[in-house]
Length: 375
Image 1 (cartoon, helix red, strand yellow):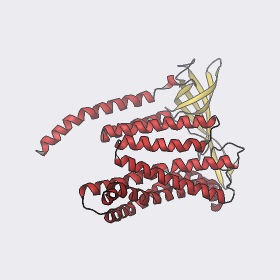
Image 2 (cartoon, one colour):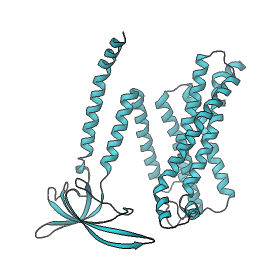
Image 3 (cartoon, rainbow, N blue to C red):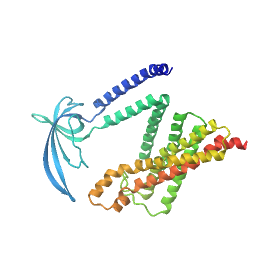
Image 4 (tube, helix red, strand yellow):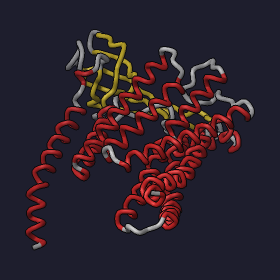
């Protein structure tokens, strides 16, 4: 009986998996050959000669420099198919430069047609094919493992990205960023929860819990910023200079608003789903027993989710942190000026995770059990 079920399962799923695999491979191939989409000339490296150049004292360390003499084939534009000679210099540490290899695609500029050969300069490395491949693999796995729900998750992610892009374009036109982020967070929450669970009581309770938690976290952050000393935003990444303190505060609050949403939503859905399953399997379970169960579930997931928030916000600064330590910059200086905003986002996100557990638990118990007991 089990063998027959397995055969039936394979007959139904094998064609779907084959179609998904073929489509994914095709899209990845297209991503690695999308030169026609660019107006900027792109060249594929076919030959490299590399030599040691010099060494320079960099603080307490000696930095070695290397030069690369590169031959590449132009892949698009007016000079498509022509061989171009390029020069590149890179350091052993590779902090501010790239070491190129055969087969790499690079953006080029200042193309000159000399008597014997074409020459140009490298303006950057083309990496979009790797990002596109990762996206294709993610969508393929979602579709293969979760079916229609996986497609809805991918669709919600794509729609959220489009909304986020248009919100940023409106900000460039002078609209207050925080005023844009508030409706954006509401739409993110509605669309994500709707695509995942449809329109149901679980979606409604999860939405209310998510918005309530994020609102409280943002309010706490705004109060702290208002009554604390002036925050030095000089080291905040991508902040236009010179800046106004109020504008920088709004940008930072917007980061907190968006940054805490994902983790809070995850906690909320877990807690609400727990209450839903308990009320469906145990019809006579009381509200106190539900609260106790939610507390145990919250204790189990609290540590892992806070660590996820830590790695999400702080881990991106580890390379820069190590670079600063290598150049003998004091630990307190790094924390104060370079990692302050990552740590602040982590702490506010952690507060959101902690608050999401009781808020979602009490709202879920009220909607799934409390209303029945009061009737």
